[in-house]
Length: 113
Length: 110
Image 1 (cartoon, rainbow over the protein chains, first blue to last red):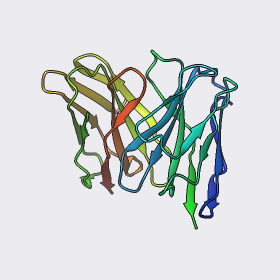
Image 2: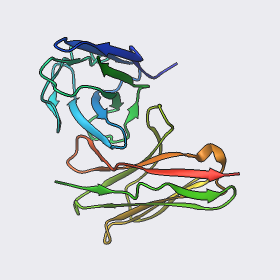
Image 3: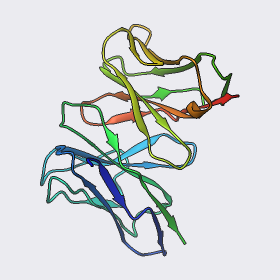
Image 4: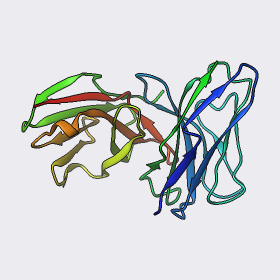
C-alpha cells in the first residue's frame, strides 16, 4: 500500500526535552511538509522540503528542526526552545514543487507534561 | 498576511439536503484551491481541488471558484450523516505550501 506513515501516534514530552516525530512516504513524492494544528485552528506550516538535502522554514519554524537525508523520510524535531509544543502534528507530501495536491499522514498528537 | 476565511459553523443540514460551504481569500494572485475533509481526531483528506473559474463536479461534490470575487465554495448534494466533519479550505499562495482556513463544521442530521 502506498501512503504516508507517521509515528508515534501519541507522544508525551517532559519540559526541556527534545523529541523527534517520524514521517515516511512510499509515494515517490519529491516534496514533503510539516504542519501544526491547534484546537479550532487551521493548519500552520512549520517546514517544507522540495528535494532531498534541501528544506525551508515555514511560518512557525522557531523551536523546530528538520532533516531530509532520504527522499522517503522527513523527520521533525521539537526542541526545548518551542514554548508551546502541545498540538497535532501533520506531515504531508506532494509529487513535486509544482504539483499542489498534498496528501496527509495520520498525524502525531504531542502533549507536554 | 494572506488570509483564508471560513465560517466556523456549525452548519446543520438535514439528510438528503444540499450543504453549501464557503471560503474567501485575500491574495488575488492565488491560483489553486483545495477542499479537505477532516473527521474529529483524524488527519485532513483531500476531496476536491479547482484551478479555473467555474464549477468542477466529482460525484456528490461540486467546487465553485470565482476569482473576481475571491470566493470558492463546496456543495455537497444528497448530504449523508457520514459527511459530518470539518471542511478545510486551502489556498496555494506562493507556490510552495498551502494556506488553510480554520474550517467549517458540518453536521448532517438524520
